Length: 156
Image (tube, rainbow, N blue to C red; front, side, top):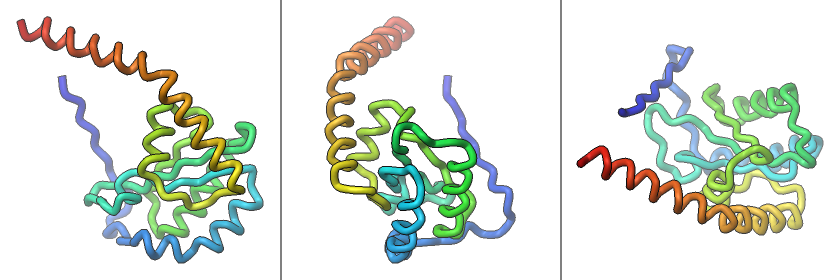
């Protein structure tokens, strides 16, 4: 069975083309904005961070809150700011405090850091990411083997 994912953009207008360079020019403004919030780290990740945007690509942002203080209203405020910075409404926000080790590792490996409260925050995130990823490696391996077995059973 195949899963089909479709995205519909509410606006009829063409999605604004914005470059990573343009976003990074607003680094000072972003730093000032996030400094006032209980946010330790903000990453840009996904196709935009790797400069591999497709027509239906969205903007992926990953947030790490201090002590899991990410409320709906705070996330909404951050989303509005990101829409302003990117000039687009198709912003996808992931909360790292509640995310899987796979997303943490993906963000660490391919993401662009938009905001870092301090160096200690980033070092702790990096260490915790590697630990969580390695501690769950056996689970991913077992899942992979189970999927392989299921495919082979179905094929025979």
